[in-house]
Length: 63
Image (cartoon, helix red, strand yellow):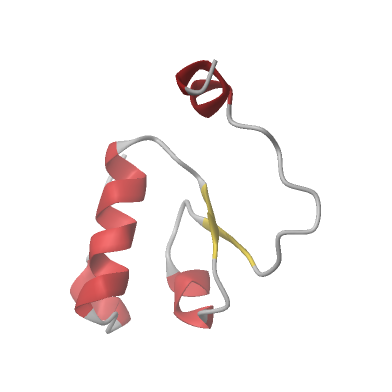
């Protein structure tokens, strides 16, 4: 899969870092009010935390 050039999206450095971390960890969703994430291929921005799905890794970490 070819990666989108983040320079073309004009993300600020913090957003670009978040995208890099999300991609390195094979995450496809991000909770954010920042609409800049809507420009990123392969990542879905979730604007509100209405019905969070539990992360099995986090459940294991706290048990």
